[in-house]
Image (tube, rainbow, N blue to C red; front, side):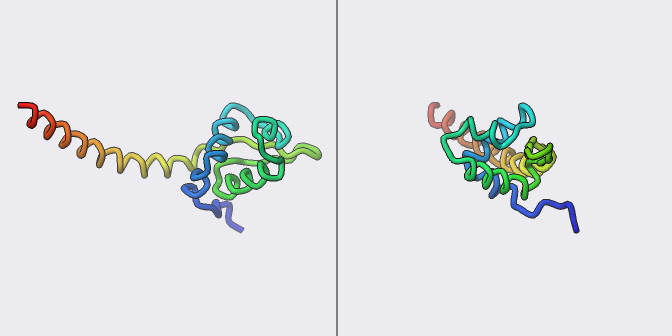
Length: 107
């Protein structure tokens, strides 16, 4: 069986709660109970969000006794960074053209 993530990173981060979970787990490893204390949603809902993030390879889970602990695994975020860099170049060009147009109209 492959260790490759099964879920889509872009779909996983589309939800604001999941993006918030990633920030929270960047700080430290936490249990579901600890994580659920930060959100006005059920522990079951938190678990579902963590499952999506885990499937996308964005969090790693580890069993410690009866407790499951989660931590951010940032490596898959490189795919997002590469995608955003492409569009950053696109927007830099568009904004430069807009600036030139606006400055030309001011003359």
